[in-house]
Figure 1 (cartoon, rainbow, N blue to C red):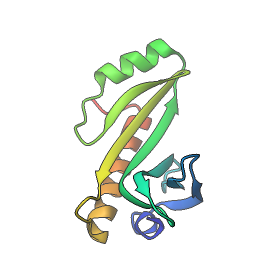
Figure 2 (figure 1 turned 135 degrees about the vertical axis):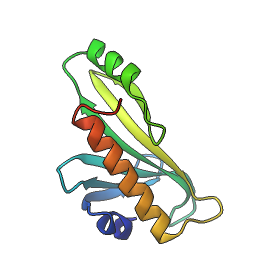
Figure 3 (figure 1 turned 30 degrees about the vertical axis):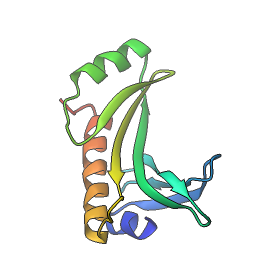
Length: 125
């Protein structure tokens, strides 16, 4: 995952494991947007995951503003939701069940960064 992030132009800022043992990598885009990728449906030691979720959360001025932005965003490449505490979460889920090429992983990260940055900058409609 770290190699794919670097190939997509992001900088790895941290890594570790969530409380349940799933691995995660924190990163920053070339434009400074911070985001997280964490494994899902993970088993074994070291953990092997059947998927990953890419997530960026943006704090807005109010929960009402989050709800209004969420309703306006129409991007099929990501999901958006009100994450509480005036936060809008943008996410993209990847399924690894039958494998994923390095190139496809890099492309998925690039798409996520592009769309999430557009939303971060007020777009997405």
